[in-house]
Length: 319
Image 1 (cartoon, one colour):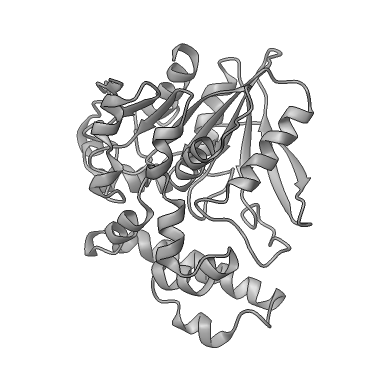
Image 2 (cartoon, helix red, strand yellow; image 1 turned 30 degrees about the vertical axis):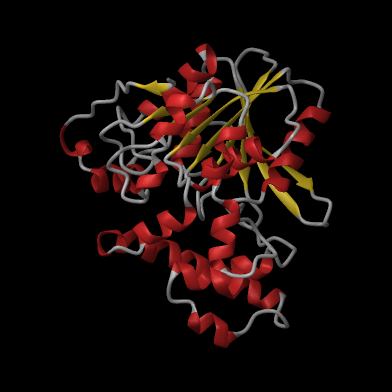
């Protein structure tokens, strides 16, 4: 233990990983949710936009929700998770990473799968409000890797942070890149690459001395994007150096609060080492649940509520 026997058994087409992934990302109707945006300034002069939603009754609990690659706080899975938590006594803080809130960020660097100093700034901002006695971290895909690295790499984590949930999380960044490079994942990598190239082109106007049209034309794969932009912008030698130093798998043994990892077996984004069964069997804090179905962030039950959303609430409530 703690290996968790999953109770997720979808019907019909939702047993297909690609269908559940695509439906959940593109076709699910987002639950209605009232949000309030707040901008925080970072030490380097940049900013992050936070979208808050609040419980109907006063509460001293808040969940920080972290999105995936090229997502934002308005994605359906983010709103769905916030909606379930707010209905059950939690405030929520849905994060838009640098450059993901609809406005280009100010610095040359942006976000990546291991940029935990920005998450730390958000946690500190909430603690300064002196309003919350309990903080939970909930992350999807890249956001799951980010929160696990945050929890495992630090010698000190604020006592208010009591639990975490990482959903469809690429514990090995290199392994997930290799998976996304397979022919059956061409739709996803093409979509990611389109968005990343667009971001690069926008940022090129801000930093013409650091970015060029010739480099832009070279960006024909996710790895090339990381070699040309992500790695040098954030202080890494190359893409593989970035993947190696930021993959959260290596940080799991150091996590000392309860964490649930929910990774579907038919998630085509994940490599085999994203299912750390032997580690979880020996751990008292890493709860690993690997349902047969669910695709990538696609744990459909109804459009109103997903299994992953209910499971997150259950874990944060009962632990």
